[in-house]
Amino acid sequence: MSERQRLRIRRDAIERSWAAFMSGEDAGAVRREVLSSWQRTTHQVTPEVTAAPTSTHHCDPGPLLASTHILDREFKATMQDSGLIVALADARGLIVWTTGEPALLRLGEQANFVAGALWDEASMGINAVSLALTSDGPSTVWSAEHWSSSLHAWSCYAAPIRHPETDQPLGVLNFSMPWDRGHPLASTAVVALAQRLAPEILANSGRSAVPDPNVLLLHVLGRHRASLAGTPLNLTRRQTEILVLLALRPDGISLEELHAELYGDAAVGIGTLKAEVSHLRRLLEGRISRAPYRLAGPVGVDALDLLTELQAGRVRDAVARYAGPLLAWSESPRLIRLGRTVEVALRDAVIAGTDHEVALALALKLEDDTELAEHALRVLPDGDARRHIMRAHLTSIA
Image (cartoon, rainbow, N blue to C red):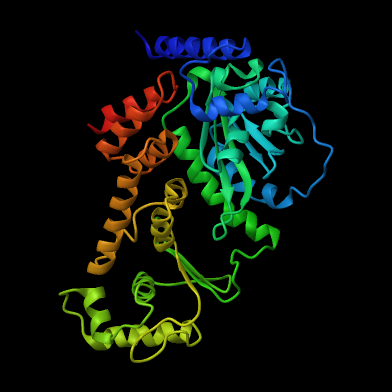
């Protein structure tokens, strides 16, 4: 049996569930978030809706549009035959920009998948844009999972674009393609690009990326970066390590302790570290105290925020925060332990639960983790179109 035949069988099963629900019968094996949306939409939108409404509410799409050069750079060379539509929507689900394969764009126009159209749940029922907004996380809506029967020929992936510091929604990035062209990397790609768009949108909106005007923010998961009072800091790797170690010791740390946590047994003179701290103190305008070393003022570290989310039971939020390994290049014994703590705590929390969206999201981030991928496959509902993606993924890493 070919992959397309297997997909056809799954599509037919979801079509039957959709038809059963529309007839007032038990929908059967349908993802929880899909069924919940269908139930909310029953008295709002007819399933025969064929096109999204054009919004009469005007807003300034300038900051979103200013970020599209990133998408142009990513897709310009391949869009003519990409089998893909890329769309950018604001935080309400209003599309502000599209690009893609011309033939698919024309098909999209039939459903008013164009700039100025509103694709929230109240207008079109469940679709990838609306699900990304209602779930505040990456979403996939495949074939007959769409509320509108006119969208059953599509497979769609979306991710919210969030304020890097406050997590407030800035918009949604969406990939749409024919139902039988879904790709295992589509979910990962849309999330990664959404993360890249956020700083560009903020830079063009004139909005500060920092809620507290005095906060020192350290991003150490994935690509490391830092800012002070909203101004980016150009830190070396060593300076980043030192600041994180200081943030881990809010009550202060001696020079000798800091040396041990940073260098371990490496033969690095104590004077070298002392000079590094002195330089950092000048860079931070005196926000490092002397004897013991302590960071003054509010400090935020994304890895510590993630652990706080886990302690509060907010596993989905913790997974959303995880952008990659903690300073993967670091040889600091203390930071290696912290990175391991973050990863183990996160995956254990996911594996202990049954939230398949969370499991799938983390499995796509920790790509070589067989146990996590097996768990994601276990908790994905029967008939979920993404099961074939996880099976293919497991095969590739086994």
